Image (cartoon, rainbow, N blue to C red; front, side, top):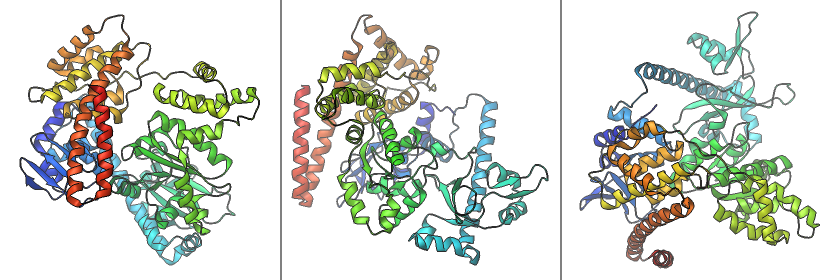
Length: 595
C-alpha cells in the first residue's frame, strides 16, 4: 500500500484533531485551543493542549506532541501505517494503490486475514472454555503448581487443548473451517487417509495477541513431560503470524508502558511473563521460541525508548543477552541488562519467594553497553595478548555505535584493559565495518506549503539540505537516520510526514522526486543539491544543519519548561519546581552555546 501526503491531509480535514482526541480526553476551550488532562501521564493540573488550527497537540507536562496520527500511534500502540489505515477507513478516504488490479488483490488479502483472525478468536474461546471445564483439571492443577491464579489465566486468556485427536477438528468441521484450520496449524491432515486431527493435544495454550487485540497464533506447553512431543510447540507461521514480528504479552504490557510510563521488560518464556505480571511487573513480554529480533525491538520502540532485557541466568541466557545488546545499540535503545543468578529465571525466583531480591537485581542492573563491556573484556591483570584478543568480542557492538558515543566508551575500555587508547581505536577500526544505507522510498503527492509558519518553512528547507547531503553521501559517512532524533526536533506535520518516509526507506530515485516532494519542495531540493560544492566536508555541513535545527528545538523546549515551572508553582510542588529550574538552567546553558 502507498498513501500520499495528500491522503494524510484529506484524513485530517475529515477527522479534525480536536473532535477525535475529545473521544478519549475531556477537553474544554481555552482561548483558541482546547485543554484537558494528558492521557499519557498522571497529572493534577491539565497541561494537555490541542491546537485545532494547526492540527496538532502538545502536553506541557510530559512533552508528548504531534499530529492526529502521532496521537493514535501513542494511544493505541500501533505503527504509523496502521494509524493511517485506521483513520482512512473512518474518514472514508481511499488510500492510493499502485494499480486497480493490485488494489483488488490487497483488499482480498485483507478480507482473508480478517477471516483467519476471527477463526483464531473462536478457537481461543474454545480453549478457554475447556480450561474451566472438568476436562481441564490437569491444566488447572499445573497452573496451581506454578502459582498462577485462575484470574491471571483469564487475563492472559490461557486455555486447554484436550487430550483427544478430534475435539477441535469436530468443532471446525461443524463450521466448515477444516482447510483454514490446517492453514493456521490448528489441525493436521493425513495424506494417506485424508482424515483431519487436532495438532495441539493435552497442552496449556497461550494465545499470541497483537496490540490490536487480535489472536494471531498459539504457543503451547505439554502437560505430560513423559511424552515424546516437544515441550513447547507454537503455531507455524501464516499470513497473520510471524514469530519475528510477535511478542507474547504485548497486548497487556502496552497499556502500562504507554499510559504509566513503565519500561518494557523482555524475558525468555511465556510463564515468566504470566508470573511476573501476576507479581506486579506488568510491562513484561517474551519472544516466541526465537531470539529477540530487530523487528520486535521496533515494536517496543513505538512505546518506549528504553528496554530492560532479563534472560535466564544460565550460559545460554547470558549469550542471548550479549547478542541482543548490539541490536539495541543500533536501534538507539536505552535501558538496562539484568543478569540473574546462575540457574534462576524470573518465574523460579518469584515462586521461591525471591520477588524482593528480583526487584533489587533489576534496580542494580547496568546499562546495556556497560554490561556488554563487563561481560566480554578480560581483566587488566591478564597478559596484554589476552586483553587485545578480547577486543574482538566488541566488534559486533562497535560497528553499530555512533562515533561520538564510541569515542566516549573507548576511554572506558582503555581503562578497563589498561591498554593505550590509540591501540584500541586502531584495532577496532580494523575489525569493524559500516552498514549500507537503504535507498528506496514510497512516492508521495505534492506538498502544499503556503499555509506553513515561518518556523515550519525553515524546518522544511533544512530538511531539503539534509536530504541533499544524504544523496551526496556515496562513502556512507553520515549516520543512519534516527527517527527518534529527527521527530523530536521538528514540529511541522509536513516535515514529520517526510521524515517518517525518509527514515523508513531512504530517498526515492530521481524519477520519483517530483512526486515525492511536489513542485514547491522539489525546487528547494534541487537548489539545495546545487548549493553543495563538489569538494566539501559533508559531515561538517550535516553537523551545522543539525545544529541549527537543534537550536530552534531548544527554544521550544525552554518555552515548554516555562509552562511546567508555572504549573509546579501553582501546585506548590517545591521538589518538582527545583528539578525543573535545574533542567531549564541546563537548557539555557545549551542555548547560550548555540548563540
